[in-house]
Image (cartoon, rainbow, N blue to C red):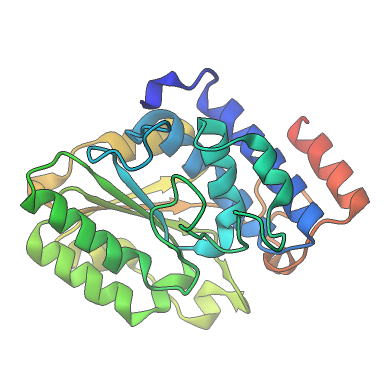
Length: 272
């Protein structure tokens, strides 16, 4: 269960960031900035919110977490390892040929990963199906879906938004990591999403706009009951590369991997 975590959410977030930095450096992979912007969100989820059973990953009463922004898979794997779904030394082989932890979130071979993701726009529609099924089966399981802001350009997400609001899927919570940067530019320049809160409310969602690095605010927003049986969206305002000064707000760290000196400086900055 969630409360078995020994440290607090800020400590867990720091450890997740350290894992991610080492994993992406070792694999010479990408998306470290996207992982760091979401680290506080994922730490709060796995520390304080999600009902999970690491020794029984398929427990029918578990909450479901879908990382729709599957390119941030290193962060999800780090959280699952910290929670005991698999050994931490699996992280050392992240993104290697034949290893269980692929470069995008992959269900096969990785206990605790609910859905293989990475093709953007799929996570929320799947989450709708899971939430609808849980209600149909009269289970208390909740569904949480973490999306990127650039991912909200996908029309499939807006179909899911309309569906969830219409069906009053109160067991569904979407979290948008709104760091303001996507693959090729600023979100406001590529396709401006604002006023995002108003759009969700118009589609019959409970919408909460919070600082995505404030653990208390995140926990309160994620734990609060929805209004009138509506689905909930938490728009988490974040910073790309949060925690590492030379990465923060820099588009190039969407794809770039830290070299040896980058890693040393980054780990020092986060206190590792």
